[in-house]
Image (tube, rainbow, N blue to C red):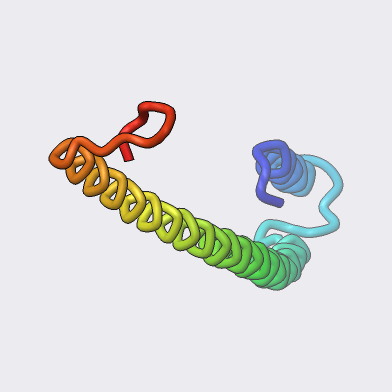
Amino acid sequence: MGSWAFVGGFVAFMLVWALTNLTGIRWDPYPFILLNLFLSMLAGLQGAILLIAARRQDGVAAALAQHDYETNAAAKIEIETLMAINREQLKMLAEIRTSAVLTAATGEVDAHGDPR
């Protein structure tokens, strides 16, 4: 009911109905009571279909939101792990830098000639 094909077909049907009842066989004369009844039933049906579609869309949106939450939670854990590794590496680099400065200041080397 939400396509241009439906809208075009529906308008064409209503025009054929009106023209037929105005010029040809008159089973539903001018106020088109029978056509109004059909249109009222169609409106009631469309209301129900719209509610069903809205409910389905809410379900899809909820599923996407849950997936986004789970992805974000997993990413948070991975980022925290990487940050912990980064902090450890910074500590190690600081220790190496301190050791290198002390070795350079004292001039100590090991048996292979490398600074201690």
